[in-house]
Length: 261
View (cartoon, helix red, strand yellow):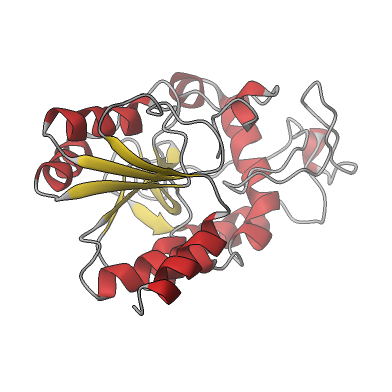
């Protein structure tokens, strides 16, 4: 999900906060209800030329690994093998109280069984009306890159508890207000430190968890190349030796073609 000047987070969208998800049943209903609506389309997303280009560069040894902020697993679907999901993935659901885990596809079947029907579940457990907007822009039915769909979820929506201990189930995603797990931070740091350089693709690096990796690369004396449409947080950094503003898929296809990779 974009966090730049024209991204979702600067145009009225309010992301789920970790503490709110943990402490508020209404927030969990909102998240899972909207996720349930968006999953069928989200799960059908396929890699684009940018994903395939990076996978090809990894296959020939030009890319050692990918550190991604995306939660959709499209890099793996394109064939990339060494992928570190910095912010986790929506494809796994886990319990906050025990070690129970489930794949998102099977969890979708549980949500569908508890909340049947084409619309949202409203008060009393009945299928509600067509989705209504919840942001100032008024965008009913809008689907965001993480699968979230603009919809109003009623109090009758049923959120399943952990089948093992009755705890809270949450996607394996780092929500706002939470910290990226230490092991992921360490793994990302190790990849930067052991690299010859860093290629930033399709990110403004507005989140600190990603920006700090660029700062680490600068500290380690690594050169940085950027392929991104628009401004990034590191545009003025001395370590940035190349900045290309072009459509990602088109640019990656040209790199593969011109390099005979």
